[in-house]
Length: 302
Image (cartoon, rainbow, N blue to C red):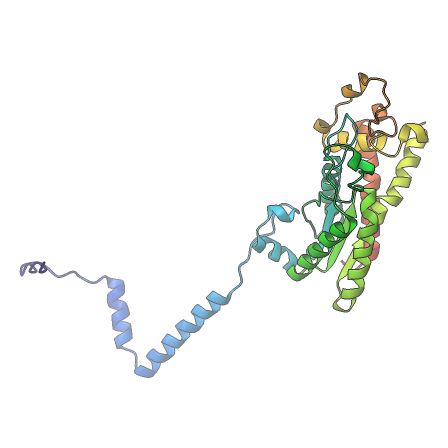
């Protein structure tokens, strides 16, 4: 369809003052000045386009709750140390949830990062060595426990560390809340520390969090009149008290009152009924202080 004829009586649109000024300015330039102006404009556009994205420092230390731009900005501001906590999904008696270790180490990792300063925290590694599969041994004898082999756990730590190094972190701290994780954690940390020594990358197996602090916790409870039998080794006073302090909804001591007398194992070693949130807070402080002390000694420059 042919376009309609323009109304001969219509008034043509009037250019804005700004457009008129621009046109006048361009017409007043010599070809050389015009070319220089165009090139300058292109240069400014290139500089703006190449300027890296930035973001203010976030209010959290948890990498999973940050954008990649926030992580990069944090690293540029000196947050080059990172904690890799590992927990475990395992039986903890009839009175505690399977995710006990995850809740505890997730909480302590944030506290440790806060004490150290300029330190971020990765998500908790939930899947750790828990025993053999066939026949099941250790915690694998109880439904709900999810375990991986030492080789798989070591591979996860290796991949996490390499990812963090690629992102710009300089100090990587492995912290395990589960005893069965210590050996592969130590081996991975030692191997990567040797591999990256020339690049100035530090990898630490923060063993004092579990070992040295564990000894201090036992002495603390013994000073309060507890015995090795009441303290126990698993799901007893220490574990129960720690979870009561950080995630009380994960503990229900009333489930222990009606346990029948039977041969079937409960998964408990010790007397969890003697646990309390107050004791848990004191026990957790020992773990936090031990970890902070070891990390500071291993990375004094930060």
